[in-house]
Image (cartoon, one colour):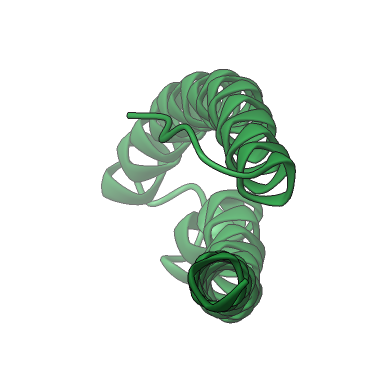
Length: 126
């Protein structure tokens, strides 16, 4: 996919390929981190589910009030809320950064193409 041309164009394509490699590495790290996060979230959900189940048994026996069940589920609800805000914020920032990077790369490529066109036009006149 690399085009051969002037040294400026080759350097630009090399830069684009280097950025793509960085993007792939960052994406792998991100997928790994999010996978671990959701596995831990699943473990927390199971633990809180077991606690809520025991609380419901105590409510049915009349030992504790029903509100105690809701309070025992609050750690999971809090973690889910914080995680959703984090994912929303990171996704929004990621979208803005990707759009900006794509725009800057496109501008670089257009300038390199324009430079090459001007260089070939200058060679034709000489």
